[in-house]
Image: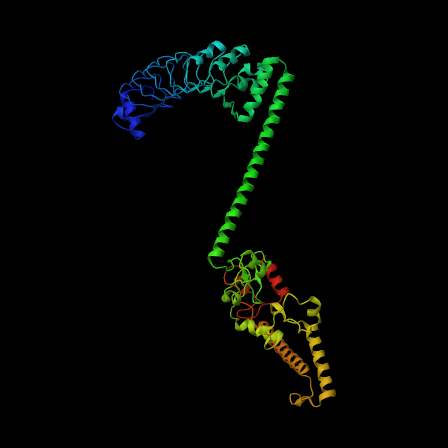
Length: 493
């Protein structure tokens, strides 16, 4: 497409799903279509945004009816002059970068123009950019990557006279190398600048640059300017420290005020309840009162704090009967013990051990003195041969002891003189030895059965079928020895 006619515009509108009626469209996408001329846009009077970049346009024209235009994109064309934009009085953004423009002109009538992007053009000196001073509302000026190489003071003077300038892109021009202390100079002379060459200008940097610029303008000495900057930095740091200190003190005051209010509410709640202890006072089974932090609360002190005189502090009896953890404040809930746990406990501690509780006052030495039975073997491990021999040896020693001290082994259960603990130990060892013997027998039988399982039949087809036809293998016979099988393979090869 090289001609911007009515049929072409209609096809593009249909493709972009816009309105068939031209004046209803507020945007139009005409970029990268290869157009040579701007034409046939008279009916599109409602356009606010127009994309024309990436074409072959060499002249700005055909925009006399676009009075509502806000944004115009004309970058990446071959335009060499800014002209024929008189009707665009409401234009806010003009992008005309990557063209061949040598001078900024014919834009002073655009009172609402905020952003002018004219980078990568042929701007060469201060005279080529001086027209931006006549654009009253210009906030952002992008003139980077041009050919500006003039007296630095002239360039700075142009930028300084743009009172509303907020953003400046000047990098990529030769004049930047000639401006001493480039960033500090630009920031100090453009009082409202907030962004310079991809870097924001924060308030701290603004104060430093202003102090530096003022001292340099007054004395012309870099040393004096740097001293003024250091003083400004010290002042900024001190102000920041003071702000943090004030914030910390305010926070502490807020915490104290909150604690005071909380204490007043608790006091009012206690008095309203007739002197009853607050919820944070927790009763233990021995009638001691604990706070949330685990510390014991003196009831007499609580009585004095509440102003009850000689009257006793009224504490709910149900709270005294509750069992409460003094450290966490949580109520102790009784859980029924399962049969598995009961059996394990009784096997270790004996019947009636459910009331056995190790208090915090029991010393480790006292526990070591108790002759407790050994813990059960964990993980279902099987004793090895050494363990088996040790148990059998111990059993034999116990039997000999019984024979020497209590008579016939066949009547050991009837013997009143045998120690009950010794009888239980002997019985346990006998049962365990028998169980180990039965297990060994079962494992031996299982191993014999595995050895009797015949080998799998040979696979059918292929080379194994040929081997099966060999006289050494036979049909339906057993597998040959390794030497015979090796010989058969060699014959086949």
